[in-house]
Figure 1 (cartoon, rainbow, N blue to C red):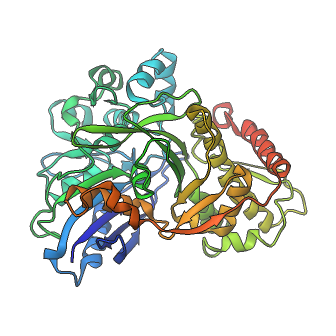
Figure 2 (tube, one colour; figure 1 turned 90 degrees about the vertical axis):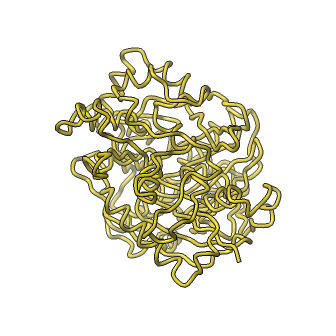
Length: 495
C-alpha cells in the first residue's frame, strides 16, 4: 500500500487525513484550537497551540499504519496568517496575527495615500489590504519590544503557517514556503518570482527574516526523528485555496471552484498568464512545478462559514452548524432581513477594511429562522459578487460552479447559491478538497501519481443543485443585498 498524509491547518482547527492511492480517506483526526480577540477587529492564534494540535492529530491519524507505507506528506494552510519567531530558540515573539485581523488598516491607508497602490498591485497582483502578511509583520516589528533590532540582527524568522509547520516538522532544518503562500504576503513579485526589495523597504521588513520559496510540488524537507511520521518527505505545499483548486481538478485554464470555509474563496486557473483584474479581484500564484508557474484569479470573502459559527456561538440560535439549514427552511424567505457579515471588513470586490457587520430589515415579526435564512443568503450573495466579477474578467460566463469546504455540506445553502447564480452548483463526494489537493500535490511530488491525468478517476460528483428560483426573484435578493452592503461600508471609519 502507498499512503499520503495531508495536514490541513485551518483557521479554527487542525486536521490530518490519510489518503490511499485512489484518494480514498483511510484515517483522519481533527482538533479545534482557541480563537483570540484581544481588541475589536483583532484576531490572534497561539502558534505553539497550532503546532501542538497539528502534531497530535498527525500522530492519531497515522496510528496503526506502517510508517514504511507512508510515501509523502502534504501541507495546506490558512494563508496570510503571520508568525514571527526567534531563530535560536524557535519561540514565537507574539501570537500569530490571523488573516482576518484588521489592526493594520491604518498602515494600509497610509501606503495607499502615499501613492503606492499601483506599485504593489503591479508587482504582487494584490491590493493593499490588512488581509495580507506584509503589514502584519511591520506591526509586530513596530509593537513588540526589541523586535525590530532583533530582525535587523538576523535573529527573527517570518513565516505563514505552512512555513511555521515546516520549521517545526524539520526541527528548524528548513525555513521554506511555497509560491502560493509567498504570493499572499505583499512582498513577493509574482512576475520575477522573487522577494522584492522595493516592497520590503516600503514595509520595513528585513530580507533576512524571509523564507526560501520552493515549488509547490517536490520535496521540501523530511520530518525529523522523534516526531510522528519521522523520515517522511514533505512533497506538497499550497495555501488552502490553491490546494482546493487542485483538489477540484481545476488543472486547466478557465476551470474554477469556490470554497465555503471560514471565509469564501473563488479561484480560476489562468495557466501561465498572470492575468490582471479589472474588477478588484486578485492575481495570485496557484502552484509551481519544476519551476513552471500556474497562476489564478481569486476573489476572497472574509466571513463565510464563520457567519454560521456566529449564529451558533455568538447568538445561540442554533446548537450545531448543521442546524442552520433546518431552521432556515422553516420559513419561505428572510422576510426582508439582510445580514452583511462585515465583522472584519469587506473583501473582494469591495475591499473596505472599515465596513462592519450590519443587520437591516428587522421588524417585530422577525424570528431566528428569518435571521438564519438571511445569513445563508448573505454567504450566497457574497459568492455571487465574486462570480460576477470573475466572469467579467474572464469575459465568459460560468457554466457551473464546483464547490467544497465545510459549509458546502449544507443543501440549503447550496440551493440558495444555485438560485442566485442561476447556474448548476456541483458538490463532489468529498467536500474537503483542500486536504485532497494537498494530497494530490504531495502524491505527484513523490511519484505516486505519474501524471495529472491519473487523478481524473479520483474526483466524484455527489450532488448537482439546479436553480429553481425565478431570475427576477434572485435579482430582488441580490439588489437588496447590494443596498445593504453600501450601508455597511465605512462604518468603523465614521465611528
